[in-house]
Length: 511
Image (cartoon, rainbow, N blue to C red; front, side):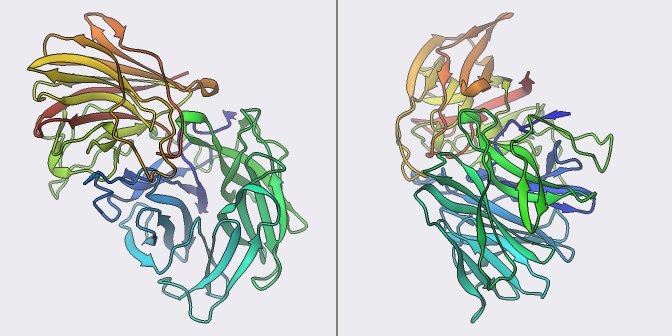
């Protein structure tokens, strides 16, 4: 038996498929690069990274954090994942470019081919019908059904185009987060929903016997697992090889993000019947018993060898905050070291290029890293952070050639919705101590039990750890719209060209 939720980390807007004995799951990754992570499993409970669909999306100035621009809370959202006639398909929109993307591949590990679909289709879901025709459903409050051209490049002229579901009651969140299926000849459309009557996220489903017919239905699942009225909803359903059905949904868990939950279901009289509650423990048969999964987060000694093309690909546990500048980082300049160089002036952590991140993992996690800041310049900040709108960090900085350790944090004030505005305040400096030398070992701990969402920062002083600053409360907000990330960073506030060397990165999930 395994605990449910199955992963205590940020994997929202899930879609899941099964190809023979293998399950694949895709998730929203917004402003992180490489993006659109695909996970792999043989039991729907334990997962590992199979690939990322793209390394860079469109490489716009905002995606590169240039000119004060960013894509926090935007980027790619709510992918739809399908396997059809030997080919994998991933469709999603990016809310900064306002475009719809289609990626295809013959193998889940790629290479993936990119194209655009004419139009912008919020929270869309793809359906290949038995007669060779292809459809999207999409929208919020009003759900549209749209037939696509055979090459999936855009709407089919004269094709089916209609509203199939429309909000008819007071709501906080109208129907969205579409997932569309044809099962045993009947069409099913699943959505997330927050009606004013129920007051929390629920899962809804509408079904019809034909695409021209009436879709009827409503709420099919309403449970928060006893967790702060945080409803479990939005995600895909998938069948097991022995014919059982499981929904893979998500639940908001504070600053750590939106985390996956499994809910069994079955069909009665042509309609899905979900379990009354999400089970706190779950067990499903594995199609490959004894398989050993690679961890979703982990340590790194930064000992890399370039590929045949001379490039280095970091472990799949890593993602960059926004598009990296490959000219300004290296793991080969000095073996065993992640070296980052500043290339622009940045007002704070959120605009730092080449911040290297991993998901925070609950119930608690601890990270240590050794920093050599001998290449830093006055006004540079380099160190270890929990990256979120209300971030906290510990950094080595220099003033008039002297070295200091500082702890900075941002309070939970209202900044923006969907990343439209992120202010340039660096955060409040809550502690500063002088240090001798430029090499120091740093540690941070994140505690996410019962939405405590605290982070603490430490430095090694001889054999002992000393906490610097306060225990900081992180708050999940829509300015980043993402769970917090542990990150390694460098940014310059006065002069570019400084460097920071990170080594011996150790990541531990605490029980």
